Length: 134
Ligand SMILES: [Zn+2]
Ligand SMILES: [Zn+2]
Ligand SMILES: [Zn+2]
Image 1 (cartoon, rainbow, N blue to C red):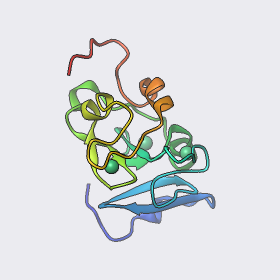
Image 2 (image 1 turned 135 degrees about the vertical axis):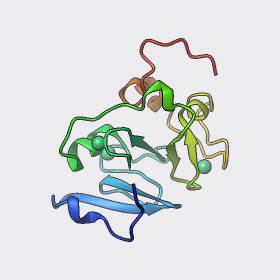
Image 3 (image 1 turned 60 degrees about the vertical axis):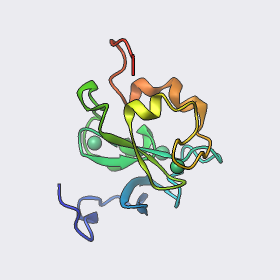
């Protein structure tokens, strides 16, 4: 998709928000400069996920629910090597494989990630039925 200067046109609900983080835009509710949101806002909640359905970064699945008008789609295994996890601390987009392998910290800036996120990785990534061997 194109990266135009303003594509908020499709978002018309009051609570929604769009933040620029690094080179990316992050859509959600009360999104801050490091991708925290209304739902997850601890010091370590600094990742946003690119959902396969709309190709947009959201801080969490609840944010996707709030701003999207469609069911969320997880990142398919075939795309695990593509950048789909945005570190809000440094703005680096990590591949899913890198993120899942990253030991709860950003490999680029070493900012701690919330280890709880990895526990529900299956909400975001198609990890359910695969042997993960990266
Ligand atoms: Zn979507
Ligand atoms: Zn959220
Ligand atoms: Zn980082």
